[in-house]
Image (cartoon, rainbow, N blue to C red; front, side, top):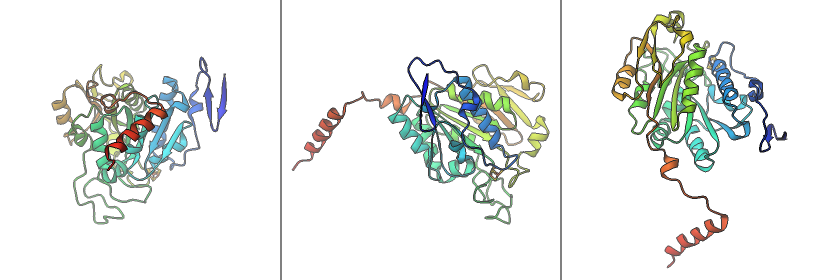
Length: 317
Ligand code: SF4
């Protein structure tokens, strides 16, 4: 039995309601036709239905950018915040309400430029959430501006003679962060790999960073063209403890057996520039999580006031 609170159905205890995928659909997505974000949205809604996540106990947090419209398109709770600030908001939500399931949607500019400091420290804090970085190699919402992951030489409105610097490598950067516990890469044009990777990230206890290669047919239509048209340019990292997609074996025949516990091998794979590796690069659920190491017993309002008074008393003159 359920009743409605605002837009969300609220379940009473013992409710055996089965959620259909359509029940996670929010507003109609306004991304451009052919945008890879649509594919990610479908994979996420499929995941929530498969895991039967309760909408009012699930939160999507985003910053600013095309992909940051994500929370509007989910019928869960959501927070569409400031540019680059999705991760501190998500961290605050999870620390205060650990029972909630938290997802973060960021773009490449959002995460690896203005939000880069938050990205590094969120990985180090290792608070349990799934962070998706949808990487189309450009600032799309602000109309074709160079981002840190824009390929060198790519002409944009902000660097019309071509991007000056080599692109930042988000997987290599993530693998360099102390206490990182889950780093993976997938592509939105390989739906079963996308789904399996997001599922592995969701199941991981700790901060899961997933870079999703995402086509933007408006500003960077050629960015992943070679990989999309010729699967031989892609290598799948396979392992029972990572992502296994038997349905893709015929399409992606280049496969590497990679143990996600092997950080040195993960770093070597991340540095390969002649091909695209998809899969779980690194995973270590034993890494300490901030919410565990800093856990305090729940306190009543009276106890909180008493604690505050005690603190104030320390500074009394
Ligand atoms: Fe998607 Fe690019 Fe359109 Fe943004 S500009 S919605 S990334 S296709």
